[in-house]
Every structure is written in structure tokens, then in C-alpha cells.
Length: 302
View 1: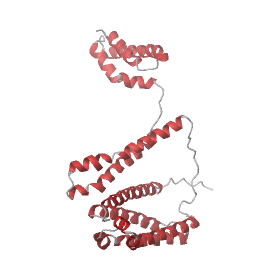
View 2: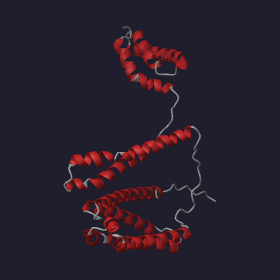
View 3: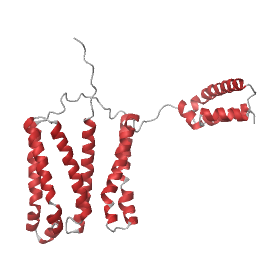
View 4: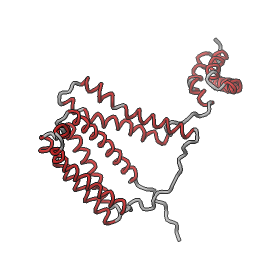
């Protein structure tokens, strides 16, 4: 096979991967380009072009599929290049978090194979959900059903809406009172419901008490923020620390033993704790992202 035949084979491989209506023009353009490149390479080497020279040139030029991609119009972008890193971190982070929350069961005696075919493989639902959402968003964007609109952010992101925060604090207090009263409420329910919602004695006596301290700490931080009308560096740091403490407490609750006496209620509670820990992690990541150092524009001399 002479060098021209090698080039012709390469051009054919590229041409069959491009749109039919542009195939002839692309093939002619590519053939001329490669022939000219081979001539220049042979002149630089001071010898006649041979199979080894043309093969080396074509391998440097790229695989036919990669070259054809240069001539094809860009397709639908599922994940923009600027979001690839954050998408990968969130996808893998969600899997790692679910493994971290469920692996303690393996160390407690659960068979590794049972864990792998339940929580191990099951953790990959999260990347699948993210990809599905990205596909739906890309499809909607391509059809013009949804177009993101830029809006300027608040000039002072540390300011808070006091009315909304007071409303949230009231519901926060109601939720805490309900959770503290739940053991008493469960004891007043009919016998069947009491068995469903009865706490495990070891949980109430040994593991439940830190939640009260964390609730008080979070409530105190939010009341301080509401009173001042804005977040301060100290309250921001305390809020982050309490978020990390809640994650640690949830992991402890999940790994250390039963929460409820009923197995079905216990499994549901641990699943809810896993989901709550995931939400707290995402909330912390968003807060860290928003607290990045802003760009300081140079002052204009007056």
C-alpha cells in the first residue's frame, strides 16, 4: 500500500463519520491537507515519503473519530465544562457519604456481600439521579422550554429577613418541643402505635441527649443573627460547626445501635437520618461556595 492509499483509507474513515451532505467537501479538504502535510514532512526529512512516514503523520494527526468530531456541529451539552468539577465532586461525594454512613454496619458484623448488594451498589442511585436531572435540564434548554435568567444578588448577602427568620425560629421551637415530647406522646398512643413509635431504651439513655445541646446552640445562634439583623463572621463559623456536629451525631446514631424498638420504624428512622446528613453536607458545601473570597476591584483615583 502506497502513501496515497493510506491517506485515502484514513480520509474514508473520517468521512463516514460526518454528515452525509458535507461528506464530499470534508473529504476533499482533508485529503488536500494531509497530502500537503506529507509533502512538507518528506521535504523536511530529505527523503521520499513511505508507509512508515505517512502512518506516523496520521497517528499524530489523530484518530479518525476524533478528527471527524472536529467537523461535526457541537451536540447538546449535558454538563457544561465549567460545572464538570462540581458535578463530579457532588456525584462522588454523595456515594462516599452513603458508604461512610453504612459501612459501620459491616464492622459491626454485617456480611460485606450483603452490604455491597444493598447499600454498596445502591449508593450509585445518587449519580444516576444527578445525570438524569442534567439530561432533563439539557433537553428543556435545547427546546427552549427553560432558559436560565441572570439576576443580581443581594448587595449585602449577610443581611437577613427578620420576619422570615422569626417565623422559622417559631417553627424550629415547635419542632424541638415535639421531638422532646415524642417519648411521652408514644406512651399515650394505642398499644399497637405505641409499639411502632417506642424508642429503644439505650438510645434515650445514652445517645439522645447531645441533640438537646445542639438544638440549643443552633437556636442561640439564630436568635443572635435575628437580633443583629445580619450574619457575622463568628455566627457563620458557629453555624458551620453546628452543622458538622449534627452530621457526626447522626452518624453516631446510625452506627451505634437501634433507635426505635420496631425494626421497620428503626430502619425508616436511620434512612431519614442518612438523608438528613446528605442535606446538611450539601448545605455546608453551598455555604462554603458562597463564602469564597470575592474579587476586589481596584479603586479609581478621584
